[in-house]
Image 1 (tube, rainbow, N blue to C red):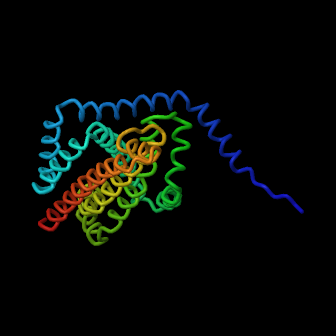
Image 2 (cartoon, rainbow, N blue to C red):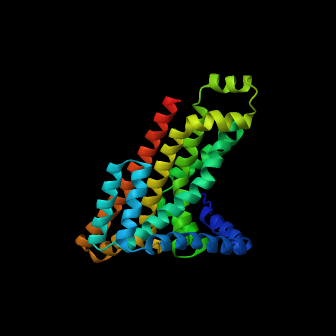
Image 3 (tube, helix red, strand yellow):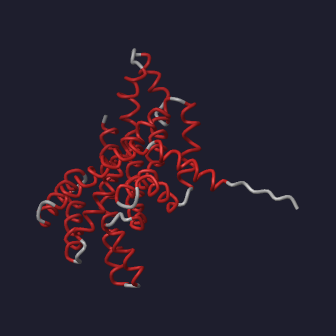
Length: 282
């Protein structure tokens, strides 16, 4: 009987060790930078008194979306405070928003570049397919290996997990813009950059916002899973409840996650609707 084995696991481990060894200074600098972003978000959210922060967030959501969502936000945050998970909720918001911000800063430009180059899109597409089909728990392994246990590793795993929809929907939105509009823009003397900035991006913005919505939802879900590597927040409440079989604690943590998900989903959805209306008016 011929033995046939492929030591793929060993090859991957060796590769990660080499990468970790050579990129160690860069990874430490990146870890400090990412840690400061998370800490900054948490400090902003936890510094004011709880009631003041509720009002500020509700007013901001009401201004960006509508007053109904603002009222729901205030009531939801009031419930979160009442059931005793305020600090954990703010920590989860800080981690989810930090991850979303960095993901969008990286993902949307990649999507824009890929929309302008078929070669780059063919390179990016299989990578995105791989990222989306890989089980979410697997992202935790390289994150911990490079950045250790804690919130920085959790944010890196969140970024990788949440990036595909931002890139895909940016490409889709720009590519769906009518060719006649693009050709008309070129006919009036616009450069490729001007056409992208003044025609394609404004029209594609609702689709890009749908990508932002999906990115936020996936980041929020990953922050819960990342509690296994020390992310803290509401995910940690759920994890402790599983370890102690405390149904009440699990319900409280799950309710906080649901409230956050609804607020963030309705916020981005209403922003997208506003953009659609503005586009139709124009």
